[in-house]
Image (cartoon, rainbow, N blue to C red; front, side, top):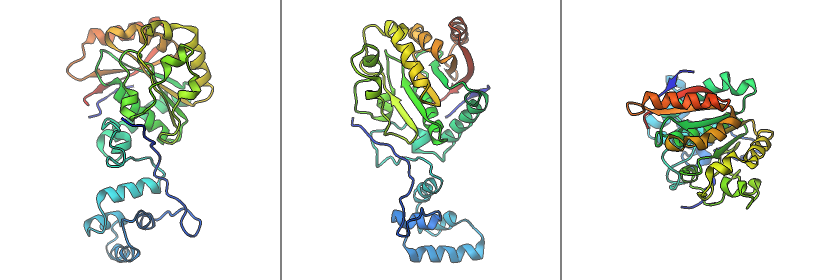
Length: 301
């Protein structure tokens, strides 16, 4: 695979699938959805359709150009029309702006993630390889940003996806999704809670998230123990795809235990900052633990 360069309180993130209308059917016309949202009046729909018949322009284009609706209204309506998850900044202010695939699904960065998703689906996931560990060539290169958006994009495709924050030293997934639960993988591996009890499954449709939990004093022992292997095997039998966010940089040895289970590693490097010897070192370590580098993302975010 080539390289890619994509430029609190708990929150329930759901898709924008519209509810049944008065006739018991799912509205499939853009105008119907905009009326249901309260963005248009039925009379506005008639006016827009009159212009559409004479010009041939799209309904959404006319609605925006004639100021019947905003561009954001039309984008949300399109998301509902195609059962596509989208969040609005004002509705979920605690969600990190890094979650571009859900917050801004029609912009260039989101399209880049869809391109990355397509390559991985074709070359990896559709061939029976459901696990993928995301790691940085160094620390602070944006691996969590890549892992979170990739997981959401796979869920948007309809794949049952689990995102695991396996970075037990500097976890970030909980903050990106604004999840309130402080317990997660570390507590599950220590036997303090059931993993199923701390997996968040009421987020984006088809997406479950297992946060890292509290930072433990012994991350290598937890990730290298039998409990992690058994937990991963259990999840692998349930989910089509598992994305694991792992440590990078000085804590790369932690990640190696995760790589040995996932078998596939997506490396993240930062443009004009990451050093070639660090990239090479990650590739060598992946090979040593029986995993392979399936691609490298050159991040600019």
